View 1: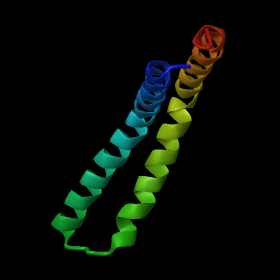
View 2: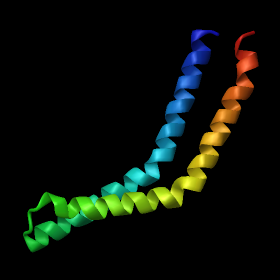
View 3: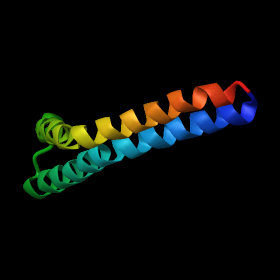
Length: 89
């Protein structure tokens, strides 16, 4: 196993992790921004008010993205296991 193969496997793992986490992170950013604007408009500066909607939105987004994320992880794992015999030649 050469350094090129290891680098390619690591790059592929990082890209897969970023692609899987991107929708959930996007939802968290949007909900956080909306809650910050609402807090600014209403002049309520309690930090726990923005935390609860953000947690609920992230959990809901994770439930929606879960089938797609599992299929992406399964595809990555399948490609990884199929490449094992060729990486030791």
